Every structure is written in C-alpha cells, then in structure tokens.
Image (cartoon, rainbow, N blue to C red):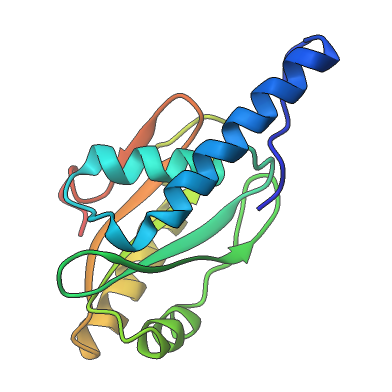
Length: 159
C-alpha cells in the first residue's frame, strides 16, 4: 500500500506525525485481519477507507472471507484511471478458489467523490455475482468508497 498523500498544507512535523499515525492504524488493523469478522457494513466501510483513502486512481479490491466471515485475504486486483477500472470476473474467481473463500466483499473507489454506481459498475457486479454463484461462493456486498461517503449495493438491493 502506498503512503498516504495528505492534501492540505501542514508543517513537515505535523505531516510526518499524521502519516505515522495512519500507518500504525493500518498495521494494527492488518495484524488483526484474521480475527476481524465482517459483521456489519460499518466495519466493512471503515476497513475500506483505510485501504482506499489515499488512491488518486480507481482500484478494485476483494476481501476474501471464510465461512465465519473472517478475513482470509484482502487484495487490490485491478487498477485503472481516474474514472475507470477494468474488472475481470475470471481473475476474481481464480483468486477466490486459491484462497478457498466462502464469501467475497467487493469494493472499489471513486476518487471523484461521487459514489453512485455507473451502469458499468452495475453490469460488472452482476457478472461477478453470476460467476461466483456457479462456484457456490457468496458475494455479500459491493461498496463504492470515497473519502467522505460510500454506496452499498446490498443496502440498495442491487445484489
């Protein structure tokens, strides 16, 4: 993961302090990953903000879960441009099988701050869900994340 880019004017000392604090929070969360259960949308979105907050391009990630909804692995599988990322369901399926995942949480960021899904977002989510259904792997949610807000496909009945 890249270091956080701070988008405000701060003294070098303040900037270093904030960057160290964010790094410590990330590392603490990552050490505890396998113990963390994704039991609520708020845990999922907080986790995603730590993963995606400092990206200026779109990235698509997957959280692979076991049958108790504990994190097996988290991977950013695809990276794109400022407003588009190309996603391949077969790559997600391969990774899910390699991790022996029972369920997936999908996520991507919108650096623009607008979190409403595009038609492309909806179409690729549907393809991924159909692909995972054939493998008996659940897709629990797809979250679009920005620094200030998020959009849950599950909460809007789009899964």
